[in-house]
Image 1 (cartoon, rainbow, N blue to C red):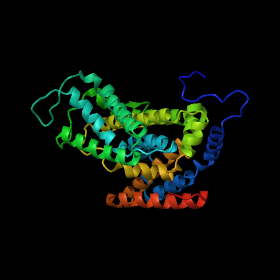
Image 2 (cartoon, rainbow, N blue to C red; image 1 turned 135 degrees about the horizontal axis):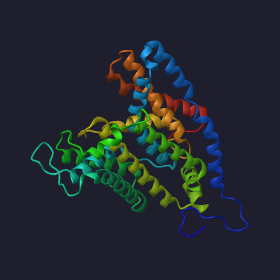
Image 3 (cartoon, rainbow, N blue to C red; image 1 turned 60 degrees about the vertical axis):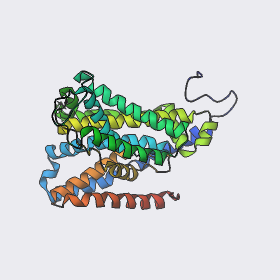
Image 4 (cartoon, one colour; image 1 turned 90 degrees about the vertical axis):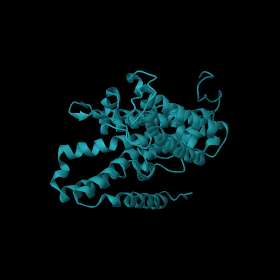
Length: 347
């Protein structure tokens, strides 16, 4: 391996790094753990059919998948970050502030409800939104890994700061005059299925494949399990974690593009409160808050479980006001089950 890579080979005559071996064994166990929600999804499907015959219609099931797309990208980002033993609360705000900054830079000032700068052509809105996501990830990585600040406090402060910036730039109102290029992916359909569903499926496949087959992907489990052991084994921990933080923020910004395109506007509160759903989905999907355990497929089943619960409740006529209570209850129950199933202590 060259000196520029993030994972170095063991010295001649030595055995494979114990941290990477541990990561591989954890991944093998995760193949069984990630299927644990499949029975729950099947039961929810049966309950949904009993509650309303409309549950199993193509329109309803595609609608559930469409509603899951933006949240699933945040869950994918959170799963990757949690697996390597970190946490990023600012994902909730990135999904809203990145689109706002992008359209603020491209839309001209018209004297109307929203006044932009008009510095860039409208077709650059998506690249600018993604660049904002990258910048947020780079900043988080710098504060956490270079200045050695507490990651929870840094990203909590980032959540608050970015939310304030989002509200300030949007002047507390929804932005409705979005560039057509910015709304395409959220509204388009490919082969009769919303484009957002195809995109999310592709990204989850890429994420799962990276964790299963790529050396750098498997290194995330080693880092999350024991960062010092991983560092001793030759894994460049800080660089890999920094890249994961950037990828997480990039996914959150892209989720903001899909969400804004889907609804045709950017709300001043877009993404507010989503972090609770994100952690609910990742926890019930088998991703450990302590790091080193979990899979993106398990996280995806967590998203689908939450969305199916909401869908069944809606079809049954249960008020949506109960959704937040239910998400919190699901997190607590999942933690209890995880505690007794694994025999590990939860911090």
